[in-house]
Length: 603
Image 1: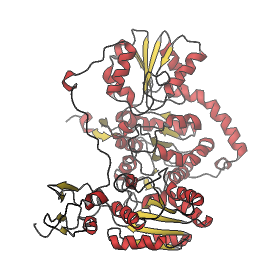
Image 2 (image 1 turned 90 degrees about the vertical axis):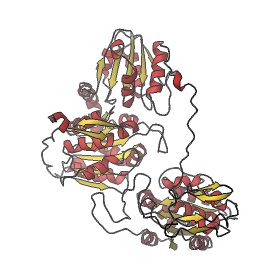
Image 3 (image 1 turned 120 degrees about the horizontal axis):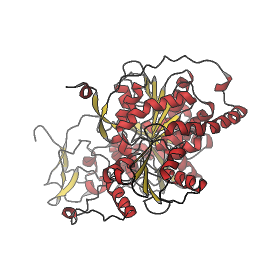
Image 4 (image 1 turned 90 degrees about the horizontal axis):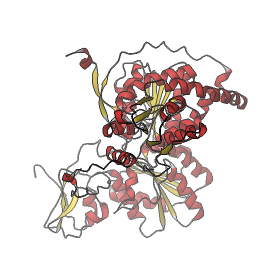
């Protein structure tokens, strides 16, 4: 085996980002889990040789501020989050753009075109322009790995945070990445007291001037990096692309026959390179996710320099303006632009559409029991159920239909307050997970108690951050580095804030769960019910359940009330698929005929 083979690893894009940061000498990694970014911090923790501090922070704002402190002390730091997490972290990041850093600081904000697992589609390249920060936009896992060292160098040279903006297919795609030797990075100098670390209006004004002055200098330097380049030629047509869409273009286009501009650092935009690309072209098609960032930059350059070239893309309706791109969509866009016949494979012309697979709570998920208990307790009462971001957002689906609103993390508590102030005769429920409670629920509870709101907080505590891959959080007693710490009790926190009624119950005990909710409904003020039961993925299966065909009346209550994917109808009776059943026992508690029994022994 040759050396190249020995130094090559098959890595997911997120793993490549983490390994690139480790190669570049990162000393602290902080973040908050969120698909598609989660595996970056997990990889850093797994690959930690003891030279790094790694933490799952309580939220993205805290992660940014922890990293800022380490960067002030001269350490190289990386902060990880998804695109909506950048909204939470934007307050400290905007100030950091003005104050600056000493050690290199790379903020990885993974965008989710689609969106596949997010509330919104957002393009972090806009935030880079808004905050006047450099941004790297990798097109592949290999490029993401290489970009990390350059991003840290740029950050330290210009004393500024730098954004890295991978998208879902870069984050979750896999590639063989050549592992390069670790860079020789000096040890952090330590924190040196200086007035520049204290943000004041006058200092911000002076630094704003410096930020504007550095933009063209940064643009020239970044444009010379290999992530920006022009290839091909031979016609008066051109294609510009960035991010993973560039890889799609390469799969569908003979680059020798058309001029191709690759943009890997979209802000500050490499104007000189763009001018070279536009020279002599009649028309350009811009292909990118999500927003027309490259397209608008080329339009501005063409207008400023009075170039007679047509720029096509999202703004002209020549490419779609929402969702992910794909090899197929890019091929169709290029076919129209170049006047080519669309190549269709006749073998698949008559294939049926794939069946719809709506997301559903896992079989045995304790959240299903929690929602059903509240639904049963509140039957006949005027009630509104405010939801939050997590697995439990799926409580909105049939047959539960227990999520009436869902805005953003933590908003269940505050939205419930707003509706309650306008409709005082409505019983207001808010559902929040245990991880989300710590991340963004605390301030809402404080607000509710302080303002004298009338609402019931339902904490769905499954002892993990389930939706993003079962990361630990402040209530689990474990850190990202595997250290055991004291668990923070949600019950004690709520009582300390001043919540008058707090009940904790196992939602899989249906009678006790319904009783706890009813007791809360009979009171006024801010009340809380904590439904505590571990995530079904994290616990051992309990004895399975089986339907007695002789006792089953075929009423389908277990199916229509719960919507558990393990239960279906078979020959006029309910049937529980053994390979899916988690043994939670909720179905047995709702069966009016007592027809669902535990499976004993080898039965």
